[in-house]
Length: 114
Length: 113
Image 1 (cartoon, rainbow over the protein chains, first blue to last red):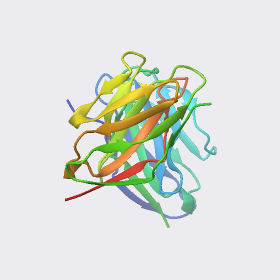
Image 2 (tube, rainbow over the protein chains, first blue to last red; image 1 turned 180 degrees about the horizontal axis):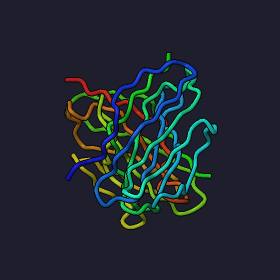
Image 3 (cartoon, rainbow over the protein chains, first blue to last red; image 1 turned 90 degrees about the vertical axis):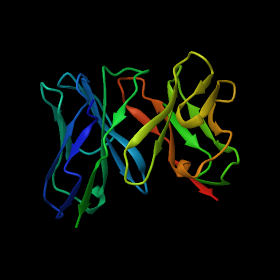
Image 4 (tube, helix red, strand yellow; image 1 turned 120 degrees about the vertical axis):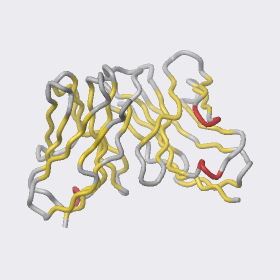
């Protein structure tokens, strides 16, 4: 079956703009989580959605937001982009979440802010 | 609070020699622990997971890890390295709520011929 699909794969934006990234989870998976990967900070948790509800949120400013649709697809939005937002954004999906659940990752969206 | 510490940022081995990637964790509850691997320009792939069953966990591609509660460790091993094992490896613990994952800083494994 198809894996986690993230679009677009690459983005270049100007400081101050906003951006929307998309994630389509594996069919049947209801939990989607987002991570930011940078060389300096490593992989950091942004937020997690389950059945259209945000269930958990990491320590990021309010410029970072997300949502999940009824078909479990998810989007994340970053407003007023800063140079430091340049990163690889990874989406992961799992069936239901929980401590023991395996998460499947997409290939990520590489965002460059100039 | 949960956290993981990967003790080596970079490990270099020769092909055919054993691999040891070290990870210590901190958790206020019985954790689930994972090792993920990331090859260049590819997504993260699960190698193995510990979920309070057997303490010795076998994963894909010949990797295994042992959960040692007394040492709060979850080291990843492989008896014989292959060139294709060269990648970034992450030790991961689950957040207490939901599927939030807490990643270590990663260990880059280099394999020379």
